[in-house]
Length: 90
Image 1 (cartoon, one colour):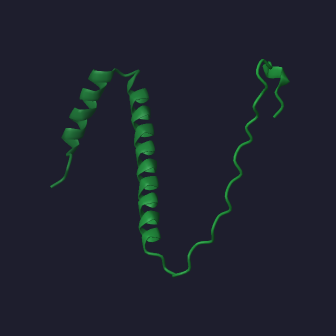
Image 2 (cartoon, rainbow, N blue to C red; image 1 turned 90 degrees about the vertical axis):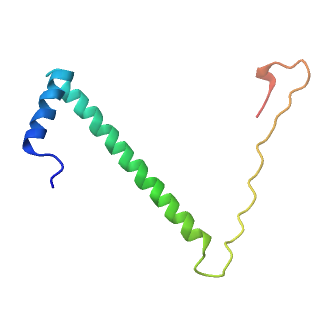
Image 3 (cartoon, rainbow, N blue to C red; image 1 turned 135 degrees about the vertical axis):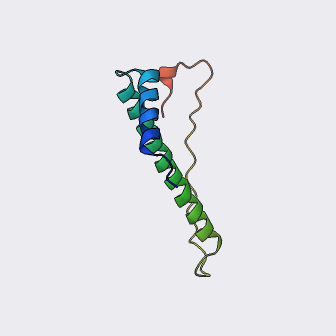
């Protein structure tokens, strides 16, 4: 059994033209296409993230990852009481 017969496709097309009008139908189709493309790319990214997380849970080798050096904290410059912004030096 086919999902849509040629008669059904014709009926859907006529309904869409009546609903949106001939001028706005291409814009609606373009917006639908963009939305589907975004949804597809986000689904792929989510699937890649899930698969990489699953692989990370069971490491292939027993070697621990190298320790990362601690990041330097941002310098905080405190101005003397009563000093203006132009007096501060970073």
